[in-house]
Length: 473
Image (cartoon, rainbow, N blue to C red):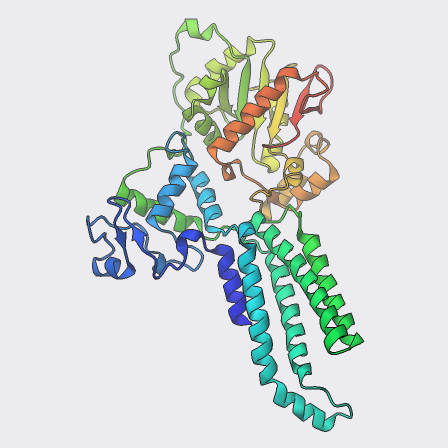
């Protein structure tokens, strides 16, 4: 049984690149030569052909943290859309964690194979092993039990242990939403199998109503637990590794392979003298403004030329980029038809972004500018069936309950309960492509705000319009 748990657990977390890691060849990203573990060990962690160092040695890493150089290179390429988009270090952290978590929805057949194998092996081995115990019981009990009773009892125990183990895993914070859904569907399959097999054996072989009833109860319980978990959203996740471990891996990679071209440094927060801008430029204004609740996201959008490609200004709520903030705001206030798009983390600070825009003297107090809340909002997360990387911090509970009344009134009871529990989702858990796509969709949807087909919901009063995007992506 322990072996079965270990095998199933491994399948949840090991990617296809990593099987079996101790025997698998590792390709040198410099020359493409395959190196065995023996080759790498004999050459002090370097390629046998070109002597290029390997940044990672999977055999020395944690059980669920096995990374190869080719895997890390592909992650960087995929996150940056083949080195065409800039990304933040935290986006890389989220992306790496997601790749390390096994996506088993397409590997249900593997689970079925393991289940059938251990179903037979555990029943045969432990059932035969327990026959002497049954003989002892028959010597003292008034009712003689047939020898196959030991096999039936062992199998029923195996089903119960398997069901409760898989149910516990569907709530595990170290696996992603897709894996949880696969395990929940597998629980449904197990329940169906137990009912069918139990009915056949109890009616056709052992002629026992007791076995019939027990099999139906266990099977229905498995189906119920699986159905309960299928489609369940809002479960908290955890990283498979610490941020310090990630930073060590990133530092070693850059020491060996050079700095990543598309990774962004921390945005500068110090006061910078206002930049000198040509008066001809300042006479112009923008039709749209994107306001972020963090300078990291503002820097990401600017670095990827979102402002040029979508004819809009991009600023953060704390005034990034400082060198052009005041000048940009002067330009924006000239446009009576300005639309403002707010994009933020789903956190107490994030959901209050629109309120800050409406009430701050640095922004749009006493203004009738239209503001569109792109997200993230709790309702968007709770409605998302694919699952998002939800985290929890006890420190956010107090901040949520202390939100201004005007902010809390815009949220449903379900949303408030979600926030008050300390849950949050960061924008950096999404790839640059996804964030750009969501913002473009928000801008496109704002073209016909008064239309019945609009994807925007009005949550403000006339003359002080605030709209919300129904779904995030």
